[in-house]
Image 1: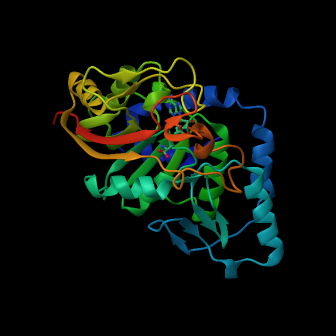
Image 2 (image 1 turned 90 degrees about the vertical axis):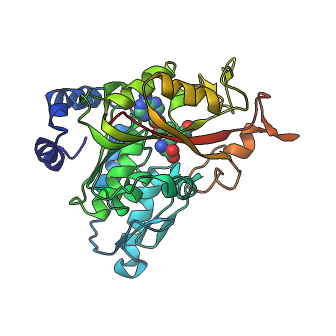
Image 3 (image 1 turned 180 degrees about the vertical axis):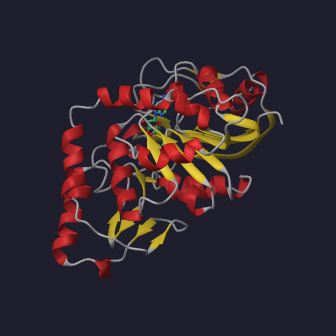
Length: 326
Ligand SMILES: Nc1ncnc2c1ncn2[C@@H]1O[C@H](C[S@+](CC[C@H]([NH3+])C(=O)[O-])CC(=O)[O-])[C@@H](O)[C@H]1O
């Protein structure tokens, strides 16, 4: 499922080597749980045209690989068919050999909000938990990280990543693994320099357990970048929806910003700072030809866009950055 040929030697030569004690078994177990559509998605990879290019740009709005002038009409049609076989594309945008994949999310907007506040990624070992199709992995690579690893259990997103990486070039030190944060190793304060968890915390029934998993994957003095849904309120406030929130089934805790900061403090994080709070707009998350189905506009009350269809406050997301003690 994953290109371990280049990943394992990299890990072996890095301080992340202890992960190799369990990683092969974890990946094998993930492979055995393959989704019913896995074969169909993988066929889209097999059918995708063989194209090579040195023309890549990971520092622009769209992750850009190849140019329209590098493909003939047949290859372009085959590429389009493979990309369309992997709909819905949620996180992006991408531009592959002139084909614009206009994803449901403008993930570049989130990146632009977060990036000014990061310790420079140059030379760092970076982990992105819940990386979706891997859009932000490429932006982290473009920002100069030494290596970037993403984890996400959704196999459609893994297949999308595999297609993008094939065209970007297998030599890039950017990998994605079909794992959950629960699978992350305890790297005993010798782990990643920067760990991102964006859009995952509210999906976890045990949010403090999630924060502990992230902490265990960091090195001493490492940086956590946490982005999640928040509600208004003081440090005693969190929203637990009765059932769905904005039509999402698996939403558990939506804390206030002060409560989130308190969780981080109680777990031993230091230098906790709130760097952004933004209401999600229907320009940032919207239905496109590449996503299909419903999107944010359908999740909001048609008479009051400040509320979700369930009557909860509309989605607002905060980014907090914190460190593990040095
Ligand atoms: N336990 C888990 N461990 C790891 N990943 C998980 C887990 N549970 C769900 N996911 C994955 O977390 C991602 C959350 S989306 C954020 C994407 C990107 N980070 C973004 O900020 O744009 C937000 C959203 O669409 O609600 C999905 O890809 C899940 O498969």
